[in-house]
Image 1 (cartoon, rainbow, N blue to C red):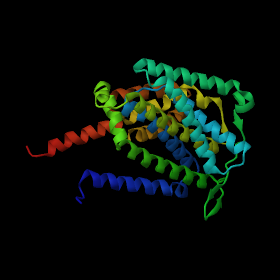
Image 2 (image 1 turned 30 degrees about the horizontal axis):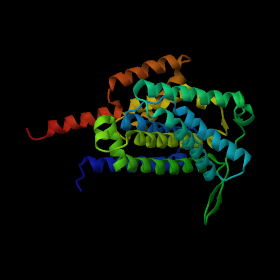
Image 3 (image 1 turned 30 degrees about the vertical axis):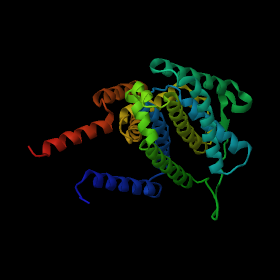
Image 4 (image 1 turned 180 degrees about the horizontal axis):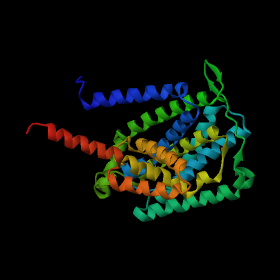
Length: 326
C-alpha cells in the first residue's frame, strides 16, 4: 500500500480522529465531551436528512418531527417504564420510524416544493401535538426529570450511565455503529438506485424500479436516523421541551449538510462540527449572535458551493491533475 495514496491518508486521519474521540473525556473538561455528544447527535440527524436530500434528491423541512418522536419516546419510556437505556433509545427510534412510515406515505408521491411543503406541514402539526398534549408530553413545560437509566449488557451486568463520561462512550459507540451502517446502505444496490432516482427518475422507472417505494424506504430510514438522534438527546439533557419539534430545529440538519457538502458521505458530519463550533464561538462574542451567525453561514454556503468537504475534494482533484504528467 502506497503511503502517499489518498486512501492511506484518509485512513490515518480517521484513526487519529477515533483516538481523539476515545481520549476526549479523559484529557479535557466536561464541556468538550458534552459538545462532542451534541455534534454526534446532530451528525446522525444530518446524515439521515442527507439520505433524502443528497442521495434521493428530496428536500425535507420536517425532520424535527422524527427527532422529537425519538426524544419524547425515549423520555416517556425512561420516566414511566423503568426499562434500561438501550431498549429505551431503540424504542424512541422505533417510534420515529413508525411516524416516518405514516408521514412518508403521504409525502413521497410528491416532488420538489410540494414534498418540502408537505414535510413542513407535518412537522408543524407534530409540534402542535407536542405542545397541546399536556397529559403525555407535559405541554410547554416538556418532560422534566428524565432518568439516565443504566445500560444492561448480557454477561456484563448493569453499567451505570449517570456519569457523563459513561454516557459519552455510549453515544459514541451507537453513533459510530449507525454511521458505518448508513455508509454500507448508500454503497449498496439500494443506495445506487436512490442516486439513479435523483439523477433521472424516468430512466429509473423505465429500468423497472418502483420509484415511490424506494423513496418511501429512504424516507423511513431517514426518519429513523433523526429519531435515533433525538432518542440519545433525552437521557443527555434529562429533559425534553417542545422546541425539539419546532420547524427551526429542522433547519439545523439542512444547514449542516449544506456547510459540509451533500454529495460526500462525510459532508453532514463535517458540517455538524462546523455548525456547532461556529454557533458556540459566535454566542460567546455578541448578544446579536443570530444575526452574525446567519451572515457567516450565508458566506460559507455561498463560498463553498459544494460544501466544505466538496470543495476540498474538488481542490484535491485539481491538484492531482496539476501534478500529473503534462
